[in-house]
Image 1 (spheres, one colour):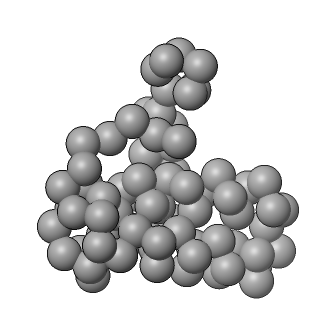
Image 2: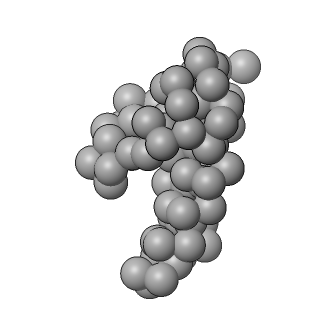
Length: 74
């Protein structure tokens, strides 16, 4: 998981699932699809509204580049 400030959880699961399935359809591994989908869900909860939580592949990559590993945030 990622430590973020939650604004609105609406749509986070949709963002996770959409990212996960899209990446699997593009040939990503389960691990990579899950990693990016988890980030998409985390990004989604930081925004107000169900559709505003959508993120681009570039946003997800930037988020992951700046994310601390879970063991460093505990």
